[in-house]
Image 1 (cartoon, rainbow, N blue to C red):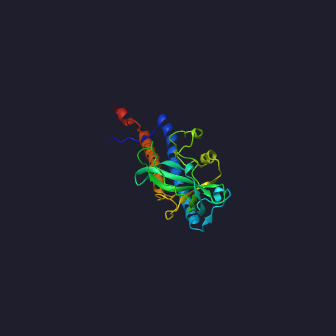
Image 2: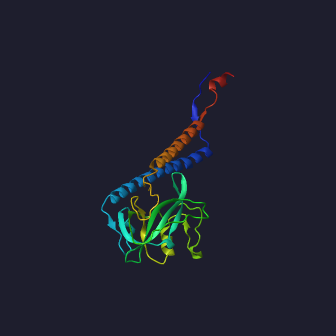
Image 3: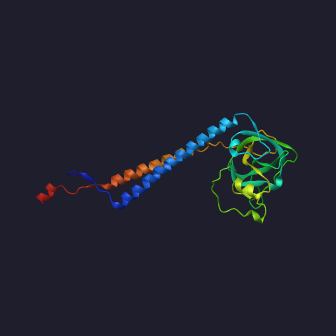
Length: 250
């Protein structure tokens, strides 16, 4: 039996597919690593600011960067009529809502949105649960956050000109601010788990949660790129044909 050398003779279609897919897979892998790094940086900033001195929320509107990730304190009155529920929030495998309640700051017309925590779904989505909102002067403490302005949505939100919408898919701070007749601070405060200001389940997730997931996705994309290259090279190496000496003796 004779062994013949193999030549690299790639086909046009496989070459085009590899030229398109390999850079795409590599890009997606690096993008996942970048997402992991972004979460790591945000968590470091969060930890540094939250561990610092407590800041008092002012009665005037402030810039979001002046409050974001700082532990803040504020006094005021909850207003249940403009309270909303953020849908599709899961805690320990159970579906539910986050309760967002505006706090009218003491001696001011500015409101501060307070995330009072998670509550279970209730009977069904057509009948949201009743929310107990304490009256009287409240002192709230928590970490100020700026909700993401890009998020996944299941469809366009219902227009607010049909009346107040109690259940929202996401915390759209810009839309909320345009829907209410009062100024709103550009942050949402995650109510401290130790606060007694009418909170619910407050098991707040860390910002760096999911880093391992991003790294796992990156590994998968890189492995796909490597596997595609290996298959392409294997399929493109073809035998050069019969030995010419054997053809001469036939």
